Structure formats: C-alpha cells, structure tokens
Image 1 (spheres, rainbow, N blue to C red):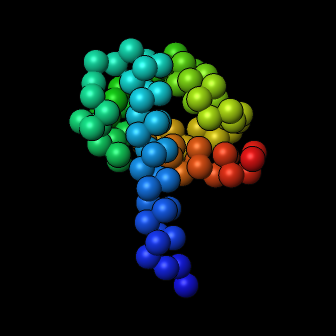
Image 2 (cartoon, rainbow, N blue to C red; image 1 turned 90 degrees about the vertical axis):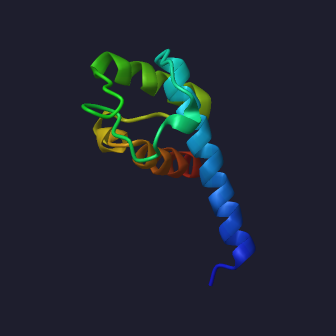
Length: 97
C-alpha cells in the first residue's frame, strides 16, 4: 500500500509536470494567459483553448524539447486535455529514462 509520503511525492511530481506543460503550451503558442488561470481539464482544441493543427505542431516541438521525449503521430489522444497530456508526458519520460 502506498504511504502518505509516497502519495505526496507523486502528487508533487504531477503538479510539477502540470505546471511545466502549461508553461510550454503558453510559451510555444504565445498565448496571453497565466498558467494558474488555465483549467487542468480544459480541452486543447475546439471550445477549450481553441488550438488548431499548426498550434499542435508547435506544441509537440515544445514538449519534445522540454521533456526530451518523442511524441508519436498516433498518440493524438493525449492531446484531449491538459490532464491527458500530463499523463502521457509522465509515461513517456518514465519509459525513456
């Protein structure tokens, strides 16, 4: 069973990834937003942040550079929301370490 200290470490790690990914989104796409105002469950496309295909390419490049990962074309489901993206990046960084 996971103890409280381990659970807190996991939560802290997830928060760090979440903050970093929000920074990458905002900086890569030159958005005029503050990270703390971006909902973790906001959709990246459509009525959420309203990204388009060009934005997604810029975002992929930013994420690959920041986290030293390779994002596969077939992994587009990871771009459903910021939380999905966090889970994806964490899984990729754990695999590629």
